[in-house]
Length: 239
Image 1 (cartoon, rainbow, N blue to C red):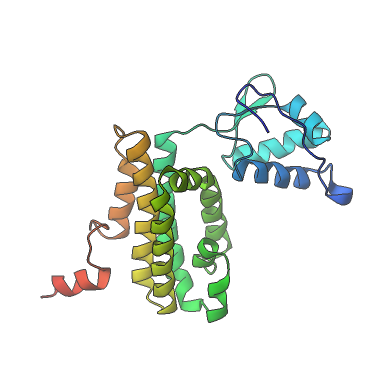
Image 2 (spheres, one colour; image 1 turned 180 degrees about the vertical axis):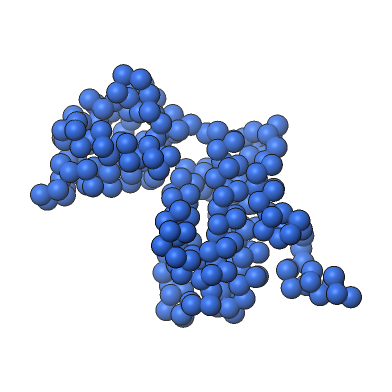
């Protein structure tokens, strides 16, 4: 659909009714194209080319691109161009460190209010569904920025999908049991494993200090990759 040279192939017009040429519709369409990988990292986007491909005017397009830039999904370039961010280990480290801290808090706030029917909803959004609007919006923004990294993680090794599914099931079971500490522990392990695995594979020389520190902050300096659960470690400490 696009490439790093900035040349954009023809796209079907936005089907948004009266708002098809509006900022909201453009933002939703472009956001989806970025998050589903239609525009790969490093792709250079021309405002002129985008306007022609999408069949829209450039005024609402500029505002939609500004919104995407605020979300961290594109970077502004010279000559009315934008770029889909390329892989950057520091960015991955920072984003996943933020998710570890915020989602550990969010799941602890959410579990006391979860109902059985909630557990059939979208997994990661469910885990922080009762964390409050402001915190939930912040977490959702970071999660969306991780879409590219999640795809890389799954595609880098067929076993990673199996590992992720097993971790999701373990988090789910902790939620069913209403064990907020165990759920937060398993969630942070799950997030950190994705980040640390990718960084080790792609940039083995990079030290992911942010993710490792976030894990320690979440658990009072404890290595979250210890095999013992939070409750077991507490019991051992009291012996």
